[in-house]
Amino acid sequence: MGAMTRRAKFWMLVVLASMLPAAAIAADLQIAPPRKPAAAVNANPFAPPDAACLEWTDDCRVCQKSPTGEASCSNVGAACVPKATRCTRR
Image (cartoon, rainbow, N blue to C red; front, side, top):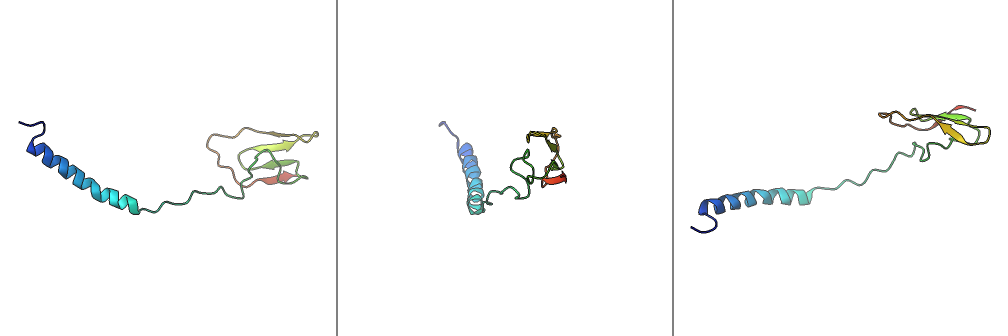
């Protein structure tokens, strides 16, 4: 007998033939464009929404501006989803 029997060749052809339609369908799928981050979420979470703001939040962390102008912020929870930064004290 040869290295491959007739039965093994038959099943190999069946498997290969069953893969061809999947490859053809995958080639026709449209690729979605990459998502852009929402404009409302502040790129720098430590920056206040405006210069007059003394305390702000994105509903994940609370930040305060010190007298020297530096920001100090609380830690973020593991499951928190930040929202738009808003001023809570002026």
